[in-house]
Image (cartoon, rainbow, N blue to C red):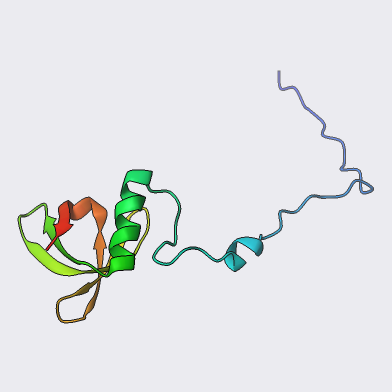
Length: 102
C-alpha cells in the first residue's frame, strides 16, 4: 500500500530570504604581509617580523632542496617569496621542512 503525502502550496505572502553577499570584508584593510587570519600566533609573530624586516631567509623543503629569499606575504597555506634574483615565487607551506634566517 502506497501512502500519499500532500504538500500544501507555499504561502505567497511570506517573504523569501535570500542570502546577500557581504561587501564589507573586501573593504577591510589588513596589516602588511597578511591576507588571511587563520594561521597560529607563533607563526604570525615570526612572519610579520620577517616581512617588516625584509630579512633574507633560508627555506628548506621536504626533499632537502633549499631556497634563499625574502618573505613578502603569507596566508594559511602559502608564502609569497622573492628569491635571490627577485623572482616572485609562491611556496606552499606543506612542502616546507624549516625556515630560518640566512
